[in-house]
Image 1: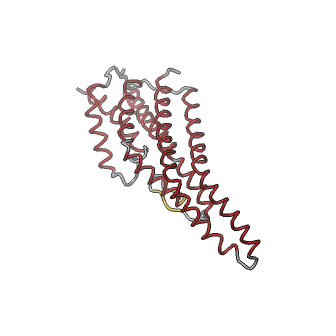
Image 2: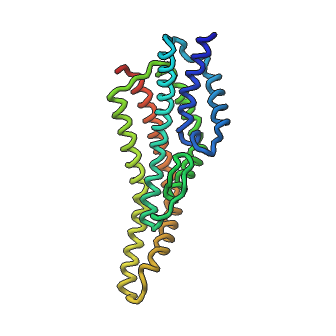
Image 3: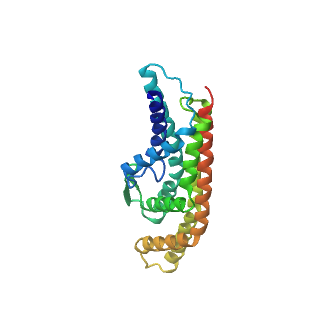
Length: 254
């Protein structure tokens, strides 16, 4: 009985570690009680199918297994969060181009200042993610991780470190690619302002330029929104692939 309780708690530890930082599940708006209850519910559902072949030794060895499972869950959630953070890169670039560079808001999940459009894009991303049942996909991959990566079987490999670095690269690459259309719109706005400054010398470009670039940027954002939604779906797919590689990477023996 004691061994079964220990295994149940180990499963719960991995799942809760994932929920602590994963997009949507890890946000402060998602109450801690609901997060803990959901983790316990998922654990209760998948516990019967989880491999019970866990070698338990001393108290310290058991504690080490709990720490390892918490690290596995945290890393899985953190990788997905990194990929979703590409929208913050997008927002930072667009904010700078549109003149919102000095404006920021507080993101309660990471407890730091984020660009105002970055926060908008992140909320939009989460809403789209939920609308296409992306959270179901993440839960499915979390559950399947117990088949590929049984309790206590995780390991740190060079391949795993390479995948983590690739996820950071993918975050910046996706953010820059998604921002290119909006950068182009602000370039056109600057070009138009340059022509206006030459044709109307008495016009104060610095006063007219800021609201003009904001209006052009917002209008262009509305125009390219369908394309942006497609890019976000591609980002979700890449996140699933990276998460799958992370799970497989930890399953390999060092």
